[in-house]
Length: 487
Image 1 (cartoon, rainbow, N blue to C red):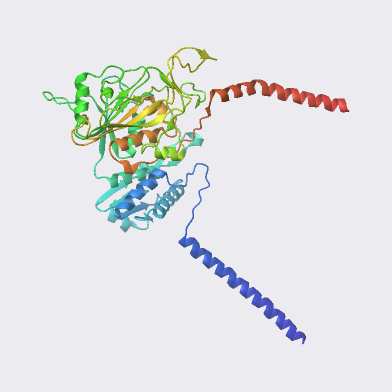
Image 2: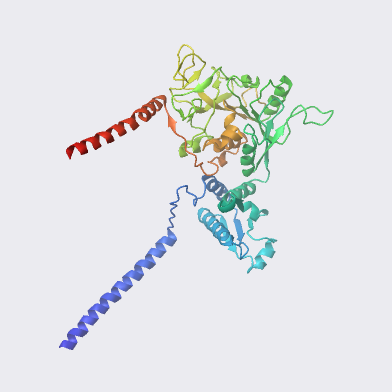
């Protein structure tokens, strides 16, 4: 009897254990199948550094829309090097993420030392090389394009530039030709070759990443002897950024003649600065004064925070709430009534409490709005113009124009100040040249944080800083006195 009971207990325990084991294994199998079918990835890093950039995902969607297969082959770093493990991990993780986010992209990570046949078949002779292939087109990325040494001494480290490099490669694969954008020079304009704070070298570098070329154009000098000056036939757009002296009428006529054939112009001015006469042909007026708003970037009193209006150029910036920083901007207005065939859209403007500052009284050293002197808000700081074939300004093909009241937002000094400046500038060029499908936020948002304050907010902070510390000291003293008295 005792034997039967013991056997029954063993069978019961054994059955229970077997059943639990089967259920656990079945749960794991079902969970694995579910996870493999419906993959979910979470990036918990503070700067979302392990997530593909919106611009990269947008380029992958463009590649997917064509349906043509893209193959990316990455090769390992040289073994035995101190940085080989980091390089291999960074590159393999990126390739896996690209494969996961695209239906047309197939990736593979090859051991350069063990699989020499693959390397030889692709003509690869260096470690940490990436080859991107799409049909007959091919882009090769070397180690120095994927990785960069930064810092000095103990802070020396390697930065991974792989996503930016591959994103540039996708731009090259998406287009057989590299569009050229010219920046007019010869009248004190900002130069694309200048690394100075007032230059456009950073804009040129950003456009280069997007497979555009920014070159200087001097209409007075850049032509062969005996030939009439002209805008080069390969120009996709011309930028006129802050001329400091008047542009000769002949050169403006050349720009307008080229525009009439389907060109695109960006004109950026400064408050009370030189305004090209050609803006009047498009019905754009630049009133005197500069733009202010109650909401501004602390501690700069002349940096109002622009509000985005819905447009292809600004839509992604509006969605991601990325601020475009302006520095002492001029107001820009479309004439009323509008020029026939010219449709104006506001890109950047102040809130209702913005105004055009024209001097007068101030308060605590800050300009204040005076209705009898200043212009009312909201005030536009950037416009986009669609010029249709119904306009006398074009012959057959429609044209596009962007007008900025602040040239500084394109400069090397201010470009990095605003999280949205580079995206705004590059999207403006994309729109001008007709690459509307490529609109997106460019690069990873800046880690720089700016505090937006109204005058009322600043007053509160001032009083708190003056009164809070003495009050806390007084309360602490009172507490000590009451404590000693209680003894």
